[in-house]
Structure formats: structure tokens, C-alpha cells
Length: 86
Image 1 (cartoon, rainbow, N blue to C red):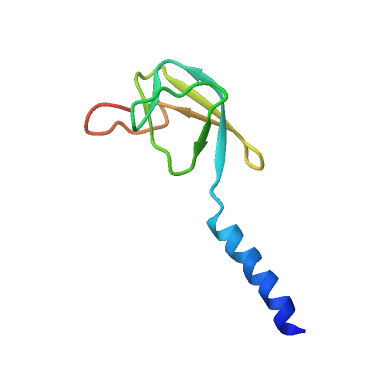
Image 2 (tube, one colour):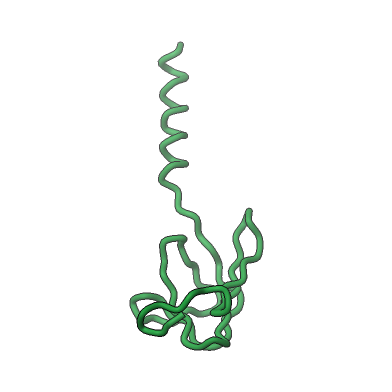
């Protein structure tokens, strides 16, 4: 009996460990692009591991997460990198 209960619990734990958080883009103001150079558009999906580049200080990105709610990413809250991108 323990063997039959342990296996589904182990599989459930493994599935939650490999799940990645995803964010849905609702609003993009200014020039925002991914690390590969593709533009970020409303309706696209970003993962937690994705890196974005904000072109100007006025650029703004609003994300929506199913459990965390609304998240605003702007150049004012981010530190500039070596190549002066935010």
C-alpha cells in the first residue's frame, strides 16, 4: 500500500519542481526587446528566466501572473547595465 501511495506523491513533487513561472504581457510602452533581439508585444508570454532590454528610460512593461497579479517593469526600477541598456 505504501508503494502505491509513494509513487504518485513522488511524481507530483517532481512535476512542481520543473514547472516554470510564466507571465503574460498586457501593455508595452516604448521599445522593449528580448535578449535575442525580438520585440516584446502585448499578448506574448515571458518566462521567469527570460531577459528583456528596455530601450529608453520611458519604456514600460506590464505583466500579468495568474497568482501574483500585476507586475510593472520600468527602467526607473532597473539598474542600467554596462551597455547603457535598462
